[in-house]
Length: 141
Image (cartoon, rainbow, N blue to C red; front, side, top):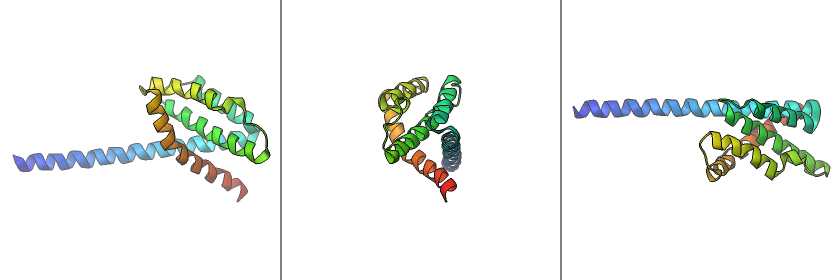
């Protein structure tokens, strides 16, 4: 009986590891897609292209709620980087306050409080920024 429990435990752990790996891959794919979409919007129509993509995503919130935060983060990073490089103030749409207002709705629907949402943003922001940099370098490299 003890052997069966050990085997069952190992099988469950292996399954959970596989589920986590798939979940992690899915998140990475979504962040990559969001970064590509933000960069495409920026290249085609500048900051207004990104605003349009972000606004459209939020207007159709569904089971892909976190995707909107990914594209929002990517667009915010692009706008901040571009505005600093060109010496103009960033768009009010991507200000911390406006961004927080948009993402708090997502976190609330996902069952996260503001503190948990902030932690999530701190974890995924560097990854989104790297993905955006990769996408931007494809057009300049």
